[in-house]
Amino acid sequence: MQLGLIGLGKMGANMRTRIERGGHTVVGYDPRPEVSDVASMADMVSALDAPRAVWIMVPSGEPTQQCVAELAGLLAEGDVVVDGGNSRFTDDAPHAKTLGEKGIGYVDCGVSGGVWGLENGYGLMAGGSDADIDRLMPIFDALRPEGERADGFVHAGPVGAGHYAKMVHNGIEYGLMHAYGEGYALLSAEPLITDVEGTMQAWTHGTVIRSWLLDLLVRALKEDPGLTEISDYTPDSGEGRWTVEEAIRHAVPANVISAALFARFASREKGGSPALKAVSALRNQFGGHAMHNTAGKNVGETGSPVSDQSKTSPPN
Image 1 (cartoon, one colour):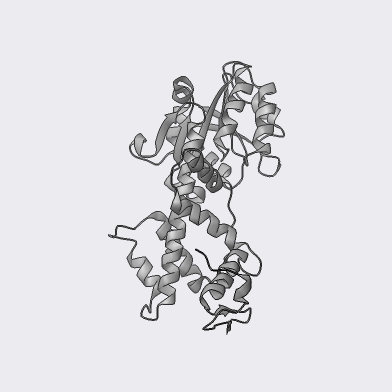
Image 2: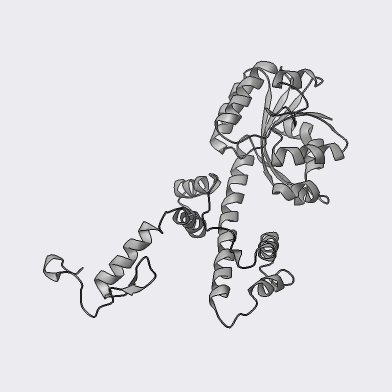
């Protein structure tokens, strides 16, 4: 099968290689000429036999929207477009409408596996019509892990379902990573534990918390014991926020995912989290508890209120 692939970054380039290993032909386009097979998106379309299939693998938002708009003018009735990036699911219906007006099919596909997907395969969550999904199945089969199709691929529902499933997947990922991070921090804080890395490595086989993410954490600790070379600054790429927003919309408690997302926000505060500074100040105000100043020393510990109580009444 032929496939046009737009976006040959870390994910896209590896996906191209895996698809080609599966016996298919990929014509890749990227704005960087040193990695692109063709000079333009129009050249990519011209190199494909009709009916064409084109996979978009670029950042969500405007870059994806620009690709969809350009493809709507280049492709023809009977062609199909896959958005395999981390687009918000609410973008899928407008994309499907734009392409559908020209008789072009649209599939959204969440792709999980990161840079390891080249060798291990990618977990795929697709949304779209039965006909479009069936037509693209040779590509999905080339990308997914070996074994039963159901263990690495799902047709999650109509257009939008694939990206919705991937959004929730990434929200769960936020929570899992933060739980491992908290466990690591607690082990590191306890003097009884003299081999933190070894303890976590021992969890990687036979335990109920073993996982690929844990394997990766152990790998990171081997490369940088104590994680001394990195800061705690942790970005978020959007899916965690969208998951929390959807939890609010559906009134579904998502305590762990929300806490993990907010912890990422706190990690990016310069000089520490203002919110936690406020908590510390309030503990001092109502209980006389010590606070830590910027030098790390205890200050403000008292047995009585530090402010004039005549101006502030206690809560009822």
